[in-house]
Image 1 (spheres, rainbow, N blue to C red):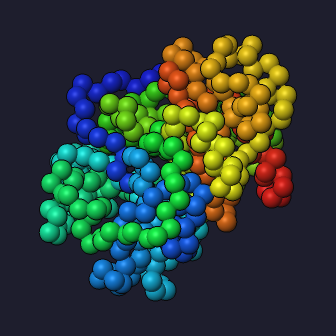
Image 2 (cartoon, one colour):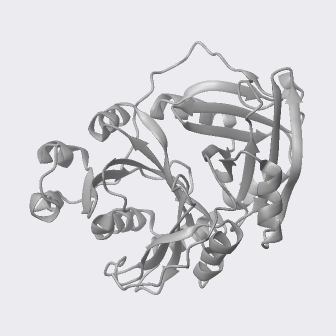
Length: 373
C-alpha cells in the first residue's frame, strides 16, 4: 500500500459522538421490508409511526438487534420528498443518525465549520420526556442527524408507539454497527475526506489506492475516516480508472449518485451467525475454493476451522493487532446498490485489505451476470 499522509490530529474532540443512534432507510414498502429484516436478519420489532399515530405523509417501522437500530420509512402519498428520493435512488439509506449529548452544540459546531444545515435543532417531546434532534447534509442525499436522548424514556422517539406483533423470529447475534461505507463520485474523495475532517473532526485511519484495490477489470480508491473515540467509522470509496465499469461506477449509476454502499454489522460468532443467516435465506457473495488452500500461510493460526469457513465462504485477514473474519451479502434491494457486511474482529482494527481482490472479483462475477461489468 502506498503511504498517504494522515491528517493532523484535532487538539480537542469538538464533536463527541456516543455511537450510531439509528439508520433510516427509505423503502418502497416499509411493512414488507420490516418483515424481511425480521425474518432474514433477526431484527426485533420495536416501534411504529404512521396514520394511527397522527402521521399523514409516511409510515415507519423501527427494528433493533442489540445496538443496531433500523428505521424503515415509506411515503403514504405520491409526489412527496420521500417518493422523490425513492424514484431517484430506489431503496437505500437516507439518514445516518449519530447519538450525541448535545444536539444543539453539535449542529452549531458543524455548521460553523461549513456544514449545510438539514434540520435546525428541534425539541420533540411526549409523556416519556424529550429528544432534541438536528442535522446536516453529507454526500449525495445522505444526511447526518444528531440525536440527544438523555432525557427520554420512550420506545424510540416522540410520535412513535410500541410495535408488538405476534411474529418475532429470534435474533441472530448481530451486535453493533462496525462501519458504514459511502460511495462518492469521480474526484470527490478529497472533498468528503476534508468534510469529515474539517467539519466533523474525524481523522483518517488508513488509505488504499487503486494499486491496493484493483482487479484485471476494475479499480477504486478508499479512505477510512473515524471520529475521536473510534465509535463511528466511515470508509469512503471513489472510482478509479479500470478496463471496465467498477462496482463503484455501477453503484453510482443505479443509485443515481453518491450514497451508502454497505453497512458492516459486528457479531461475536460469525460462524454461527452466518449459518443462521443462510438458513433464513440471506444470499452471500462467494469466493473460489482456492482462496482457502493457503489461508493458514497467509493469516497464521486462527481459532476457527478452515473447512468450516470454506463451506460458508467467510474471509479472513490479519493485521498487527490480530485478525478479522468477514463476509458480504448480495444486494438486499432490487437495484445493485445496498448490501451488508458481517464482521467479527479478533483484535484486528483494519478492514480486510488482504481480501479486497477476492471480494471484488466476487462482485465482478455478479456484475457480469447482471450485464453491467
